[in-house]
Amino acid sequence: MIADPGQIAQLAGLFAAAFGAATLLPFQSEVVFVGLQLAGTVSLGALLVVASVGNTLGSVVNYVMGRGIEHFRHSRWFPVSEAQLSRARGWYARWGVWTLLLSWAPLGDGFTVVAGIMRTPVWLFVALVAIAKTGRYMVLAWITAQVGA
Image (tube, rainbow, N blue to C red; front, side, top):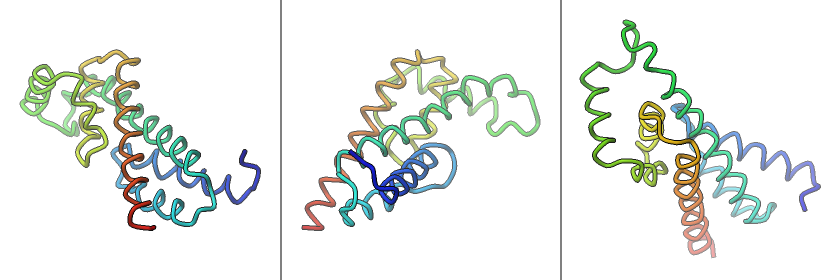
């Protein structure tokens, strides 16, 4: 059980970094995760849960943006051209929801936006993204344990 205010603050910072890193904002959660793991002040289980939940919820923000962004596609400021949007739809139609297992990768945020545009069922989106995000943090924790040992 976490009762120490210092641990709560560390986990809140990790959550914020993980959440931000999953959105289109330029955040990096890996440095915070590794730093906290090496510090050993919070259990690895708590780090994995908080980082995974934060990162998955950040991806939900992208999904919601994707669901609503098409309403603005004819605006001058719209971030992609009609051709780019059509290409993204075709790509997603070809590769499908399984691309969400790559949502942990550097360009994975784009996959989560496209999933919203393509109206992927929310339950399936969350399940696949959670698997990908949790898997990434588990691999990162394993690598950190090997290097930090």
